[in-house]
Image (tube, rainbow, N blue to C red; front, side, top):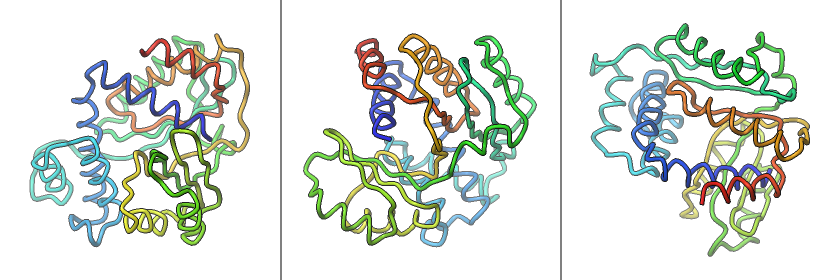
Length: 253
């Protein structure tokens, strides 16, 4: 799991370097709108909306943008098309399984763009259920380890229902069952900790090892998918080794 935190850090650096903040704001606004539509516009009563707002604020998204996205979701504002969240399954090159979560206002466009990225790299979209059995949805949190009391974090996480806490040199990762998500999130907030990542994500039941060149090819495909406007997250069962991550970090520097 620790490879995920390093990979996320590399992606954040690359996104900043490539000046993709406009795209990030678009994706975050969609999350806020969808959450408000499904659970109402009060973040104190709508936990999903609260998390979406927290993520938007963590990216320094302007308050006006967040408020407009909430109003679109509640129907106070009629601007923008209707959004829906759709999950897709498929394969990257070398048999790596992919779970792709999207937020879209046009599912035909989304499918066409996903298929284009995958087929040009010898991957493919699959039928529903074709790879989902290889993943388990979990609660996932990641934040910097600097200045944190590891014993206190471990106790906090376990009391909130976490299954595992991983302490890396740079990051702490907490994982648990889906039903523990709110309790862990609330516990971190009470402790004054704002995670860099807090989400329900698809975790592979077993990871697959590839050689460095093959792994980099797969990660390039994942990057291409994540650059699509409609794509929210991409999960895979690729084992991201230290060697592969080191090469990626060198390329990003």
